[in-house]
Length: 470
Ligand code: MN
Ligand code: MN
Image (cartoon, rainbow, N blue to C red):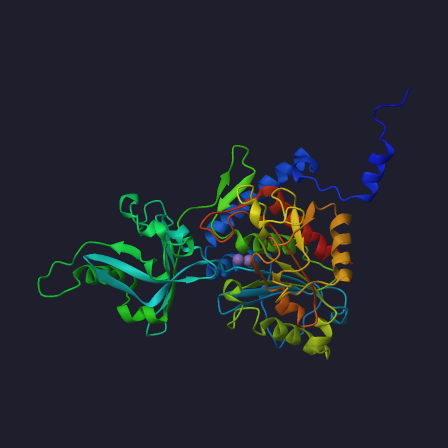
């Protein structure tokens, strides 16, 4: 009799010839799953400490300095094992470790972004209407406006006073802090609003934040509530109304990162996009402190608004950094860059069973199936895409398989149903081989985004494997 455990020819061929995607929960053993959970405890803390790009920079620099990184000096010649960081205006960060191999062999780059969609305050935010004090906001990045009403908000940012001194603000995070919120209509009176298209359910100029209601006791002036608020701000921060002009203040969700699900397999949080790739790449980088090949880790700002501005990757700070690193060796920056490889580390959309219509089921990424490699992004006929070469995709595939990383491929939704892009194209145009890779996310850009711990951990493993690769 035939052994029933023996595979039929069809089964054998299936194993050999067909892709067999498998949930990481099946592929990974219990010890690794436990490790992934442990890894994510510190990730949650990072999320809570880094709700803005500035806070991400500050938090990351603390981690780097503990590991011996020092501020980059463009005049110095660095050699193997040297650890440097470049703080770009407190909003973007680049850090690197010099490898043993010459810079002419190229460098390994991992680039993520640390800005997330949010509601920025306008330059003249504070006003009073019907005895309520409010802030006007201007949304930043791809925000679905209706999601931001009737949830607790916290105020984060900096105010630069006329004398040049800077005040750092974070209100709404501590248990006894006040919070803020944007009000919405009650259902009883929402008959007209309910007829609006979802895009207009809450309009941009309706994203007004309630910040107070108590008047200053004086009969002689108008706008007593507004005066009372600015009086409190003056007491606490020493600011006057004009100081809002030279401030970057932003409303972000006040909730903390939490385990999600009975099995605690997921994390619900604000700002996974893209601090999940920032954190995993930082941890992988710190694991590779004596690399063969020089690596550069970039935490960019402004990705959510198109990467423009001098802290975004559509500026030249990466190019200048590489040029400065290479100059003492008499090497041109472009010589280094054209031999370099980059993982453009950003999240991708995960399949949502509630909204299957926007997904192409055979090519979208799935929660729990590991880190997502995305060969191309863009919209329409791949408009605005980097579209990695087959050769570099092959290199990355080999690196991930050799390290036994759980990974999958992904495409952002159905063809012609929208689209998006990342920083990949701004790095590949420097001559760098670049591919997109990152964590699949549910409810991307919502005040609460969801990721799987197994995917987060495998993203860390992928970055680690990339930095170690020959
Ligand atoms: Mn992103
Ligand atoms: Mn995004």
